[in-house]
Each structure stands twice: as C-alpha cells, then as structure tokens.
Length: 167
Image: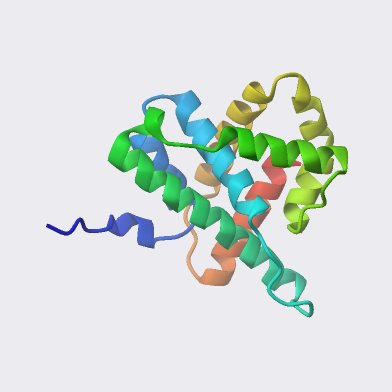
C-alpha cells in the first residue's frame, strides 16, 4: 500500500506548517527545536540561483528553503514522533559557528543577518535556550498574524516573521 502524503503539507506557509508541527510534537522543546533547526538547516542550504536575481526573489527562495527543511522534518515527526526526528544538530551548530566566527559566509542574506545579530551572538552561552525561545516566538508571531493567501503575500509575510523573530 502506498502511503499518501498529508494534504495539509500542500498548504505551504509558516502558519500551516508550524501548526502541523505543533500538533505532532510531543512537547514544547521538541517543537521549538525542530522549528528553529529546520529554519537554520534550510537557510544554510540556500544557493543563489542567479546573479541578477531581485532582492524580493532571493527572499522568496530563502523562505522556500525553510519550507523544504520544515516539510522534511514534519514528515519525520508524523511518521516517527517528535523525539525521533533526526535533526543534524552538530552540522547545523558547526555551520552556524563557522558563520558567526567569519570562517564561512552564508549565501543566504537572511542567515547572514541572523548570525550577525546581537541576539544570536548572545546565544553562545546557552544555544538550547535560544533555540527553544526563538521557535516558540516564531510560532506565536505567525499565529498572531494568521493565515495569508496569495504566494507573494505568504512569502513576504513569512520572511518578515522570520526576520522579526531572529534579529
């Protein structure tokens, strides 16, 4: 029997994706960790498609990378439970550490701004608390804004929510 993809994953925007993740998470820490690490994982995989891409198009592509990482981790959460989602924590933390120290420069403008922010720099003392705080805050911000329609509105609002929470 072929397993059918959950239809609610077709509604790609942070509101729907984070709500689905929240519903399948065992606890607040798992939810926040998966949400935050998915964001960092997605942005770390961002590759600028063209040199002459508009700023808005680049932002849309950054958000789409976050969606891809979130979607993969939500599917794992649904199948295995949130405590079994295999987040590559060490890889993400190594990447972020390299970005923060200047050893590597993120291709994602948003990720570059995040690792340059005072909030991120202060997180070195307790990264676990940072992850939990930011994942929860992102969910609250997205929930307060509500659901949007229209691709452009969705992508712009999701980018703004990420930017607002993480910087």
